[in-house]
Image 1 (cartoon, rainbow, N blue to C red):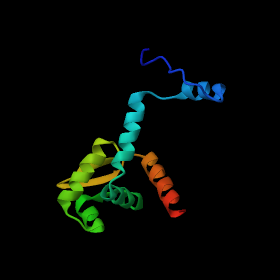
Image 2 (cartoon, rainbow, N blue to C red):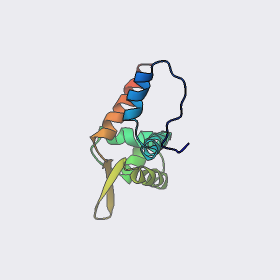
Image 3 (cartoon, rainbow, N blue to C red):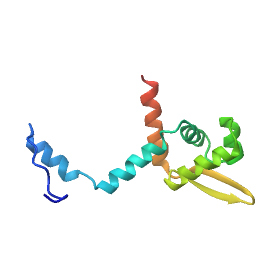
Length: 119
């Protein structure tokens, strides 16, 4: 059986199974989605995202001061967030400012905050 062929597993509501399978995304899509959530699984990175949700943009030093850690530690985590396209940056002279990549990141994070706050 090839990877594209669906596995024939008995189901209760076949019409629902068929409908959801028709909307199922690719393996690559789910890999990228899982990597996005994995990037948010680190407390330092979630603090960075929280800070960037509060202010439109912040430089590395200000993020380090907010989180009370080193510039080096923040730069390392920002590199991970940048590689995952969760944050973007711009240079102004010798200072690098970071912001959320787009409104989707803010919305995703806000939903996560609401979920945790309601517990």
